[in-house]
Image 1 (cartoon, rainbow over the protein chains, first blue to last red):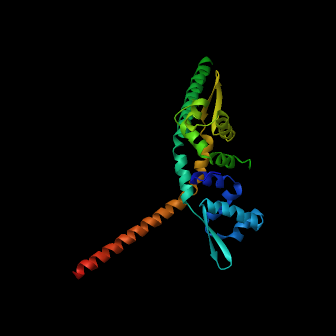
Image 2: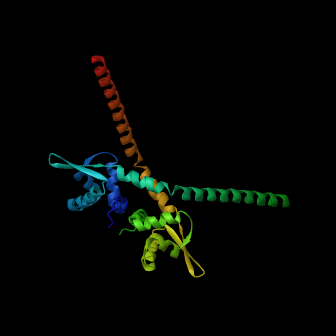
Image 3: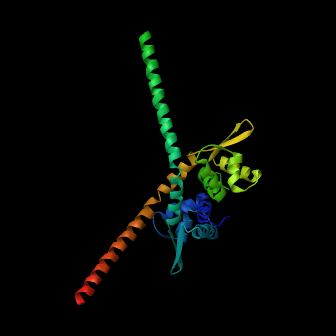
Length: 120
Length: 120
């Protein structure tokens, strides 16, 4: 694994359980036990996922009496969003071209309808 | 590796060479040889990266006489962008709070300046 931040972030996000943990943390800080609940997963398995997320800077953990509590950190997600922005032009251009094509099809269908109507 | 599309996309993006290849393809379609040039990499090594990108649906390859030509595909990148959007509120809220804090600091500095000025 490379050590650059964006690669570490993408690698951490390449797992549905870790993305589900982030989605849960979007609702607010919670304990590791609460996070583990919906996944029917052992605590060590959840802890392993949390360590990957923490190393990528996507979450922070803190001690609260006997509990470990987790919260989401936005920095790396903003970096991913900024990175995808430079590719936005591609899908927008392609959607524009698709829209143009659909408009042309509509015109063709109308012309055909007029011809069919004219023949009656 | 999991088989869901988003995980496959994130895994493919978790490598600086593959992201550099996508950045090059943003300028337009080009041959595998042209792609390999700036990386000082063997053709098999580049081909391996291209296969990972192709499996993730991030590029398409086509034969053009004796050349293989590659182009970028936007679909999976739009999916990544859509996924990050739901987290935008977090970094925007945090930037708002930071801005609020800076405004409060400014007011405090002004009050202090007035007091110091008053004492002269």
